[in-house]
Image (cartoon, rainbow, N blue to C red; front, side, top):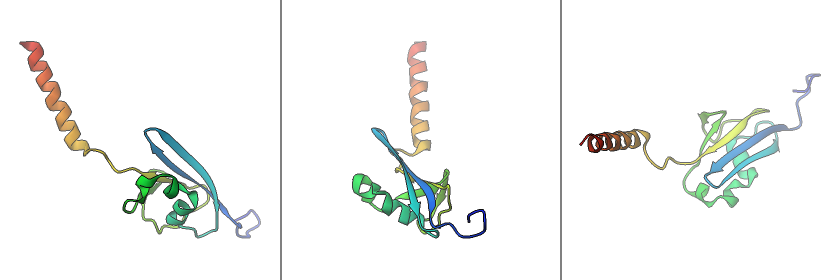
Length: 108
């Protein structure tokens, strides 16, 4: 809504995606009622980042996971998340085991 109560013609949102070698932060003007999926499609990231074409990308708005059909609001930052390379709990267990072994070797 504009200050006088009339609906805005478009809403401005950002689409963010990062991989180890590059980051994207794209500003888009969308029609009110546009969904997270609409923003992702219009951002061009699917064409530029082939890894996003595998399965349904996981999306979030300001670090909160959302469904692709959620309507966006002005000022939202849509985040496209990469899949985890390793399970965090498993990785933590491996690090702890490695540190234990290193301490044992150092003590002998």
